[in-house]
Image (spheres, rainbow, N blue to C red):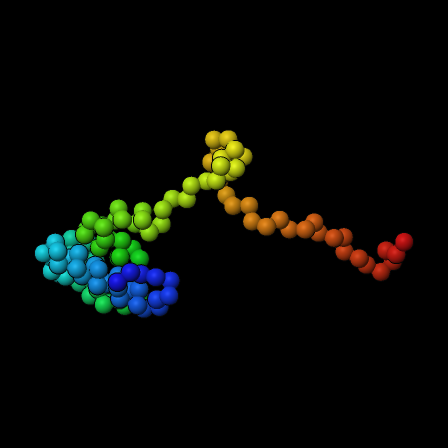
Length: 116
């Protein structure tokens, strides 16, 4: 099943869990063996494979690392390439922070007696 934006979070978690289970079984690992090699509890593996959302992302990463799936995260969140205009503006410099929206200059607070 392809993961799409129309799927619920629960459906995506269940699909990811099923994929992790298939990867584990393809490597002929038990849940207990995968948990030991990943440094997480067996219950964490059970939760991940069942699609329960109570697991932490770090546990998910450990399991994916053990299963050799970590490199595939590049497909999930590829590094964004700067636009040609942004490259010209930067001229080789790397951005250090986001600019955000610029606030309007603060107006002088009016008080009684300030009339012209």
